[in-house]
Image 1 (cartoon, rainbow, N blue to C red):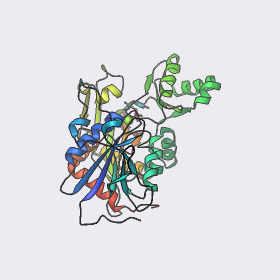
Image 2: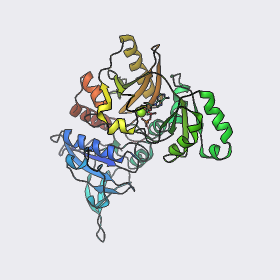
Image 3: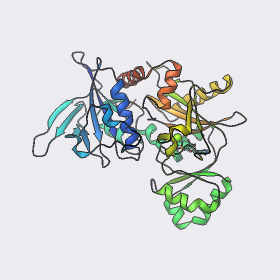
Image 4: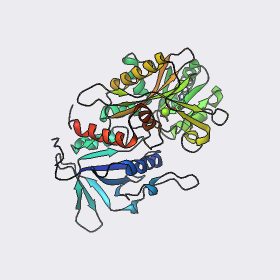
Length: 378
Ligand SMILES: Nc1ncnc2c1ncn2[C@@H]1O[C@H](COP(=O)(O)OP(=O)(O)O)[C@@H](O)[C@H]1O
Ligand SMILES: [Mg+2]
């Protein structure tokens, strides 16, 4: 059951980062930011790194170790970073234990809240959230279903469409379609018109995404997307500004809160779209404008659509809702990210900073939201 932390000691927060997805290094960079900012007078921090093959290990409480530095190798959690860690799945125990070869497991500590700083599959997609539900532990962010829906761009669109939210035209290509019904799949893509965006249904950080301007380039784009996910979604290219909005769950049963929107401005001479390079490696090619320069009416519409999108998928805690604002000022939802980039330089914290919540306070708010909500069905 959901016990409040004993007042005798500080609230203990396990930071989970790294992980099995292509966004391992980004997650480590987020951990660096949170390790620096979290209020140590209120919280005991237990950093737990997850290796690329899924092993949990005690990780260094050293922000420098986890940062992304230009010219240096990307940060990576290694099996020999520390002792292996396991989370007790016995409901009510909330305990992390360490396992050393040939030794009896020892208790690392009772955990009051888990902060999964993980992006992509096996972290942001409901799988980890399922484990945390089984362990009956409080955790930051969306639950199982919302995480899964937010991760899968196909089901995300179905859920949003079903609740009247604006999404663009698309078609889904399963690997069996591509193998056995390629002509039909290609015709469905051609009907969308060019350009299209070919994406792994479940990835992130623009990994595996191609912009295709000539249908002859579709097969190569499908192969690239399938490297990340056998399920591929192809979307009509939308002409519009890339606007993002940060959403925070409501406190005490109140409605979710939306930040002022921000804008991503990509130098299109350098990058055809907001691809992985532009996101993480070529800062000069991208400008994050925060708040975005938009008419009040559009700002209000973006904020309202962001909260409706958050509620439509049943998100909790935090999400970033990304939209396109077209030249005629209509708003189309691109996606919801239930664990958005969260380094101190990321758009999500920047939008809250512009709206009046500084990064350390945001970390605090997210932990408090997690402690406030009950574990189990809710
Ligand atoms: N339908 C689309 N129309 C125009 N640009 C798109 C479209 N889909 C994606 N993009 C471009 O590709 C980028 C990454 O796509 P997105 O769906 O956000 O994937 P990810 O989940 O990896 O962030 C977007 O930020 C945008 O620049
Ligand atoms: Mg995106």
